[in-house]
Image (tube, rainbow, N blue to C red; front, side):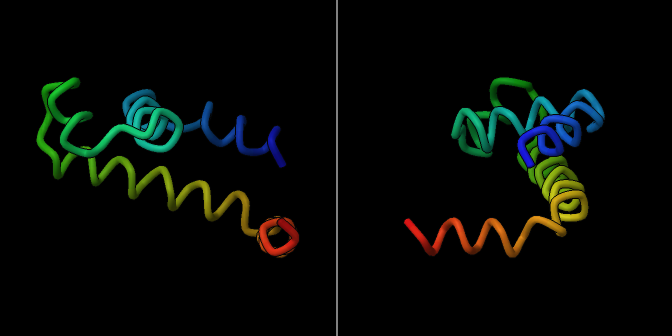
Length: 73
């Protein structure tokens, strides 16, 4: 699953991947990303939405496993 996640992240367009990393892996807010990259907050939201859609599509087969692992914690 981690390999698929890494592949999906690599396959995202450069800007979308960068924004996803800042948002989800570095836990930066939309406002922080917007200020860092000098782009509107709506643009940041757009790229986050695109990346999450792509992740969901590629990882949908692993959803039952993810839910199981989360419930077992």
